[in-house]
Picture 1: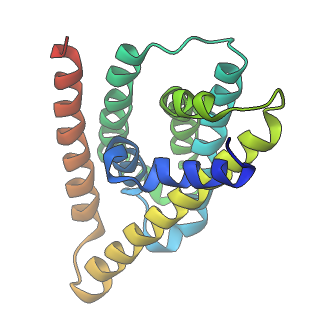
Picture 2: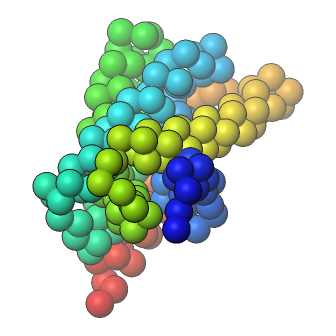
Length: 194
């Protein structure tokens, strides 16, 4: 039997687990266009992602939306690819808070899609009629895991821009390009697997 604390742990583990690299890749690609001084916007964008997948988790736990793992396996890399393209095309626009709102919308909508992948894990753990506390703890675990990953990512960005003196535009291009390439490989694998 699961305890409530296991929901937090499973949410955390679902994000920081290296086998969940598609979610890690999405979070890193999502943050690539932001500079160190935009850490508040990064927190908002990560929270928007959490709100998006929380909605999907609720709908899935209540059996309102079915989970189609084949479709999910194709949609998740697609979200990473679209995010990477948006980072490169809108790079200058993301430098201002007002134009970063597009990024928040992307995070929220794509969070709904990523929530479908979280949903199967969450439903498996659900052990009571009430989903409020388990959902809250699972999402807090995911949010804590995302913040941890973003912190490591931002430390890497700090080393690159402040110590190595690399240009942020090159950082964005590299991370977004790598995100696009890896996601494209995941997508092709998902499309060709039987």
